[in-house]
Amino acid sequence: MEKRARALIAARQRVLFVFLINLTCDSMLKVYNTLHKTKEEFKSIEDKKIGMYVCGPTVYGPGHIGHARTYVAFDIIRRYLEYRDYTVKYVVNITDIHDDMIKKSAELGITIFELANKNIELFMQDLDTLGIKKADVYPRVTEHIKEIVDFVKDLEDKGFAYETDDGVYYDISKFKDYGKLSGIKVKEQKTGTRVETDKYEKDKAQDFALWKKQKDPSEPAWDSPWGKGRPGWHIECSVMSSKHLGEQIDIHGGAVDLIFPHHENEIAQSEARSGKVPFVKYWMHSGFLNVEGQKMSKSLGNFIEIPDLLKKHDARAFRFFVSGLHYKSRIDFSEKAMEKVDKTLEKWDLFIERLLEWKGENENEAVGKLVGETREKVVGALDDDFMLPNACAALQQMQTEVNRLIEKNEFGKKNAEEVLSLLKEFNEFLKVFEFEKKTGELTPEQEKLMGKRKQARKDKDWGKADEIRDKLAEQGVIIDDTPQGTKWRIAK
Image (cartoon, rainbow, N blue to C red; front, side, top):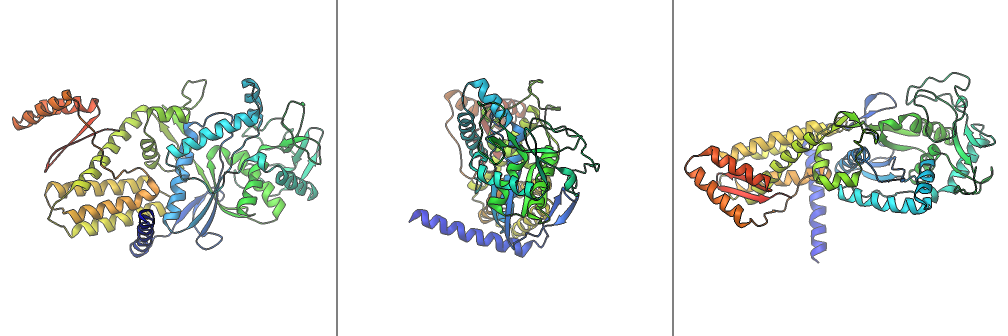
């Protein structure tokens, strides 16, 4: 019964959120479309329903922080669309057959399936730790071989593909709009020879593999009209998106380095087969992530895998880091940046704890207006191509103003509940705030330091008081001096 009651309360809150958004915010959702290189008004193919596909990992190893940035960014976008009352069917594919996987499994002396299962499990754990909502479907390439073969056969029958001694290739000269996403200019004749791997030079357009014939009996392979073989890289997403979302979808996302050749080739394959244009209505791409000012690379020693990131940094802090930056921007991950984020998040934790404990009686009518204006600013920012930095700035302004009112004792308990309600509302998509008080216990030594600091403040020895506060902070004890006295908590 308790579970049902909580579900009913949550449902009522959701209805209230939507009502408040419609009442206070009349902004129009706009999205930057990579296809047209401009921001466009967002209109889903089917009213209030969105099909959204984001390119997932090739599971030859653990994901890295570049992946984490992309998946967190699109998680916030997906959650915000749901907050805006859209029903989103969210699909993230998993590439579990690839040249890199064959190479890695051979190095480890295991099958590609053992390698895939191990890393898929780790991937799912990482997503859960990062607070990423589960996709509706995580299709695996090896579960869609029949559909891939049928798709390639259709392209061959339509004259867009041809067989050679080593595979089946897509003839880009037959697709007149090739290059419309990336801006790649293709001459009438083919511009390069076919390549053997799934990796392509980014500055040269060429025919690409749809099906790769088996070269060695040790390679994983499946039956096809062209003999035993395996799928090329690009065909996978065209097949899985069409199967799970239909031949035309609303949003296709991924990292910016997938624009060419991967997403360009998806367009060529999908539109050639279905004849429906556009294959994707809105293409969205997250920016590059650097580490300490340099491109992430194993050779530079700055390659950070997600499990290692989460051993050192709180998942909320990483989400908060991503939230402070626009999804399209190039960002620089650094320890200095994370230290700054940690401090900002600590301030938010203290602020929320302060609101949870607030028992002031001087209710302030101006707080309702502040809450309404903040909601409008945040929603307006996110409706403008998910401009999270502006949304976070609006929340910070509200925090500053509320703290000012608290210091002046012009803030009541119901005011605190209003502000908390707004933060909980926005946490529907941000997933960075916590609303349960965390205190913990002080050691005897820390108790003594707290006593000495109390005396120092009584003696107005502010320098000594600050020195003790900093010492306690190094030990994980966070202090907040409020009009109601000194509050403390144990940092997570």
